[in-house]
Length: 170
Image (cartoon, rainbow, N blue to C red; front, side, top):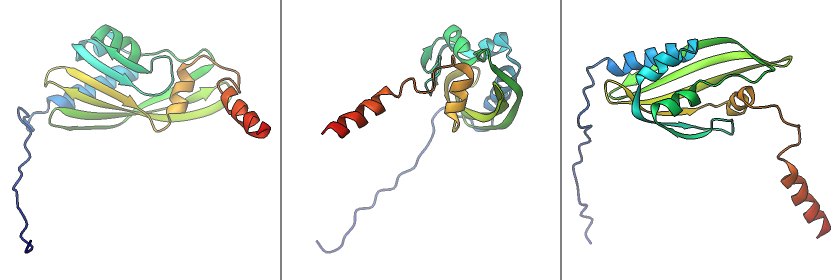
């Protein structure tokens, strides 16, 4: 080979996407408002009937939820009895094409311990309704703890103790 290199021109396009529309930003802003106020009817009206929602973490609603009724219930969850959410603010709304990102900052307390967390919602739209939501948080353990039933401090950690005790015996 004498150093000849094949060259291919590639052009990336996004079919059926009109970047000039403000619909995704408007949907995202309305979604953020509905979530922060707990407005179940508004959240439901923004979701397509075939929406798919993926919620990360280990909380009671973690996993995939299909359909607007199931998705709405998963997105709007009550805090556990000893948790108080004092502030819920929309931190960011970004949109491009048929996708949008909503970041909601929350603070409150679990018992007497103060907590803060942010939750991001990646939205996919069809221009009129939200067809997909992926929810995640950098502080997922706090978000899970606020909506979960209180557990014993060592619950779920038996496997670590068991692994250490097996190593000690060998």
